[in-house]
Every structure is written in C-alpha cells, then in structure tokens.
Length: 299
Image 1 (cartoon, rainbow, N blue to C red):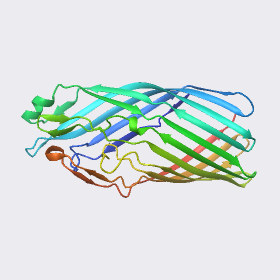
Image 2 (tube, helix red, strand yellow):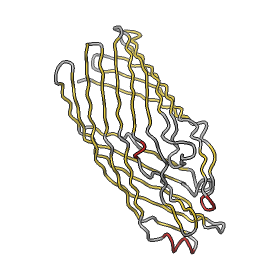
Image 3 (tube, rainbow, N blue to C red):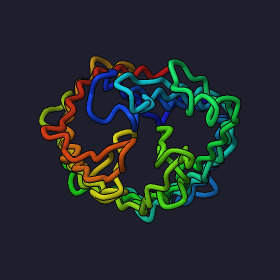
C-alpha cells in the first residue's frame, strides 16, 4: 500500500498583474492511496496491478473587470474523489535484460461549487451571483514502455518511451472568464493534445561500493502558444539528472541526486476582448532545480 501524488499544480500571480482577469491564484492538488499486488508467474514474467484512490482539491481566484476602475473578485473551491487503476507487466528474457509496460487509467473528477463574489458592479452582481458552476476533469491516462540491459558487471543502460492522453483532460482553464456583458464564459477548452515522452539513462559502478547514475528525458508540449493559459502554462520539458549511491553495508544504501528541468518558454498569445484583455508573453527563464537525498534499508 503506497501513498503518492503524481499530478498537481499551484500558482500565485498576485492581484495586480496584467492577466488577473484570467487567474490570480490557482491550486489543483491530488493525493492517491494505492493498494497494489504483484505476482511472479515464472522466471521471466511478472505482473502487477494497483487501485488508484485519488483525492483532489481545486481552488481558483480571479479578478472581475467592473469597467469602473475597481476590480471585483471571484473565488471557486471544491474537492472530489475519483477512482482509477494501474497495470504492469515485466518480461525478463535473460538475466541481463528486462522490459516493462506500465499503464495508468484515467481518473474522472467532478467539481461543483457556487462561486463566491465580492465588490461586483451592479450588472455583474445580478448576472453572476447564485449560479452553480461544474468543472469536469479527466486526469490523463498514460502508458510507459521501459527497457533495461546490463552490458557488463559495472555498466547498465535503460530507456523509456511513453504517451499521455492530455486531449481528454476537459475544459481545463481554472479561471472564471467573461467574454462580454451579458454573456459569461466560466471555462475554456484549451484544445490540449496528447504528449510523448522519451528518456535514456545509464548506471555505472565506479567502485565496489559506489554506483553512478545519469539520465536525460524529453516531454512534448500539450498545448500551443495560442491555446496556452496562465492557469496551466505547460510547455515541452527537457530534463537532465545525475545521482550517486553508496552501499554503507549490505543492508543500508545512501543516495544523492540532482535534476535540472527546463520547462520551456511557455509562450502565451491570447486575445480576450474588452473585459478579459489580451495576454502576450512568456515564462523565460523557466527552470526547476531538484535535489534529492534518499536512504534504502533492506530488512
């Protein structure tokens, strides 16, 4: 039984930036409880399955353009639970080679809330208050094919190739948007597209007790410049990582790893009319540095 979170996003732009009529703050957080079972059928074939019980929390704050010099505020918040599953197969044709296929099913999440408003102008107050808003998301299903080969006693290589079904995610813009007086738009379809993932890695035992790892990965972008939203500014991603492990004794292994992530410029070029306004820009530089310390103890 494991606990994990493989999906989520949090943003805080503040209440004075140019895109505040699209989003000011947004949080989409998930946590999964995953009971699982694995079984070795024979010397070369193993299978596994898991249940993905996912709790999700959604909150978004956006400004409302009153057209009189002062902004109103809108807030949306709800939580929901969805169920998914995972399947895995591992094939070991030789002692030095193994292949795996992992599949995660989609998880449907349904949010429903009556947005709260403050400081609205008279027209917006009559049009917007008291209306319930539903948001339906589908956490993407994905499949990953992996391979591992031990070239020598000291050197091994590995690779991944995967696909994620982002095009089924839904009307995903977390902002409450308004196109014109009397005709509001609460969600926007970002026309997301499926993405592809590829990775290459190696492990080299530089000494009896020391294991060095090195890897590179690429993920394609799920959206174009014209469709990209500041509530989900996702772009193509490049990753490079290295790590080292030290076998303290036969039971205890210590590890240190570093990962550099280039998340792309995430350029935005969106038109929004009189109330929402146009938004043109990018997030460059757009980098993440990750340091990981791990400990493995075998009983």
